[in-house]
Image (cartoon, rainbow, N blue to C red; front, side):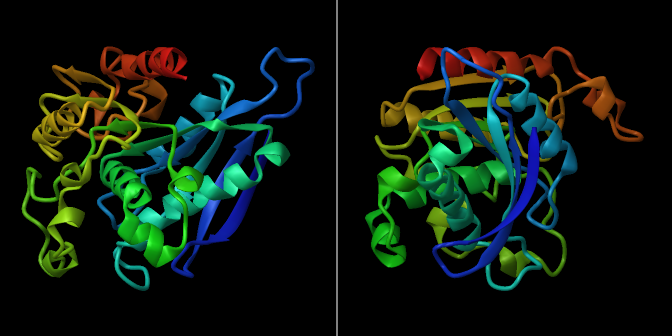
Length: 271
């Protein structure tokens, strides 16, 4: 495997970093080109969760994917979160489509995986990709930047559907545009087929986020598979015992951890 850090410039002229994990050539594979997993960690928009970054990328590598972890725009970075965070996703996808042969990537099998706040970024990016307004403003074509599939893990969809008070001093960082606050409002028939998982007892990003997004996908007849686990809390990532942080033993949850195999089965049936 080749691990490499790269700096890209998004459609708004902002630089951001990606961390790539590329599998080597192992011979005459029946399918020579690999799918690509674009991993978008959560972290409340003020940091990037390490548990939702490299471990997830490596898990996808283990299933035959090449993968990349994104460092998207955060609240402490120059400029606003949006549009840059969404444009970071679209720029990453276009970069890999343009360099598909170099990375042995199938440009028609690119999946975005967004966790928590990263789920908001992933779903907003899908909105940008299909929006004639953003296509014209930032000079991109939908077919170059839209993922083929999207996976959302306990995603923030509506920034108002959270189980805690916004910290003092951060109220003004919430976008004023209602369509940036709530990505379900921008679902269209062009939105990629989507796999979603969440925990019913999530008290941070409430399960109502997933329910609203599923309803929006249903209304536009977008293919969707959704798994709501009875327990899991928030931020369980792969839910493996080797990824439990101190004082959060609940993060080991084999039942909720089934999402990963279920997502792989879904992708296989959807490609």
